[in-house]
Amino acid sequence: MQDWVIDDQNLSPERKSLLPGKGFFIPDTVEDEVKEREIESRVSGASVLAVVDPDADGLGCVAILRDVLGEAAFIPASPHELADGIEQAAEFGEAGGEVFICDLAPDDPEEINEALAGLTEHAGSVTWYDHHQWTDAAKEAVRDAGVELVVGDSETECTADVAARSLDEDISPHLEELAAVTRDHDLWIKEDDRSDDLADFSHWSEPEEYLEVIEEHGVDFPEEVREFLAERRVEKEDRIERAVARAEMHEIRDWTVGVTYGRCSQNEVAETLREQGADAAVIVKPAGSASIRGSEDFERAHEVARQVGGGGHPRAAGCKPRIYEDMLDYAHHWTTRGAPAKQLLMKAFWNLPEEPAEE
Image (cartoon, rainbow, N blue to C red):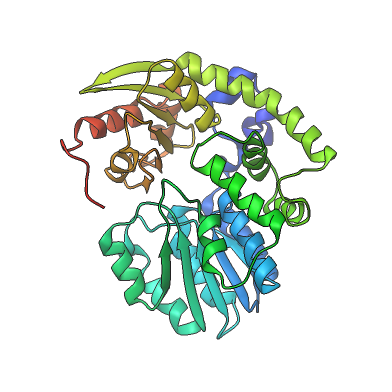
């Protein structure tokens, strides 16, 4: 296949918003091999290691760990890569070292049991900081493996908050402020304009670049970073507008659910749909994942996501429905703008029990 076929720089803005990025078309075996070599060269022999979700909250935890402990190499891991990240920590980290797992929650604790057992046997200590919704069974399984687990209140704390209050030593003032602004973004409080800068820069920059900036400047970004963000936001706003224009409102029981499709910033799209009357929003992505966002009138996003193999918070959750078996399924997904995933998620809203699940 020619490179130009998957290079979205050759696409119109509309088509670019309907298809996944170039990285989607690189086989996982190739990408995983390159990623593992990079991780091994960067973290091999580290005495302090963190397995984190590489977003603003997870990377904020790394900055706090480095501030308190003097060092912390990190392994990036999404929720569905959690077992791999734990295994890599055991394989590449120093025997008897400290390992932290941050801003990640197991969708199914059985899927990480073996990896976690290997890590606790290899490391001197394993500490887990998070603020997502955990079941009692998941908490029990992780603690039984010998992990010190601290789960914060998902409505009042981000994981950076949890790390900052759980570590014994005081952290630098600019990182205390970083945790507060990260919370403003991660919990969708939206009272601090700088939280959008954190979210966007963590998404558009390489993790080490983001860490270098926040470790030195906290949330007060230098001028070159602000110029970079302004330039990238032109395309971001265009994709938001396109996703909002595609949205449809569905009446499901007592809720109005806005449903759309596209490569876009899901939080801003969800906020716009809420302003248009949606109690909840579903944003299906070209790569096959979906984001579910709630509101004061719908705080069961995590229950919807769990039905299709995901999880998260009452007002913010994510998943990747297991409905894609071959490239024809993905082709159907793109040409129908996510119709199979939308149908599955709408069914999940209908299938919610009358009363919210007890956590």
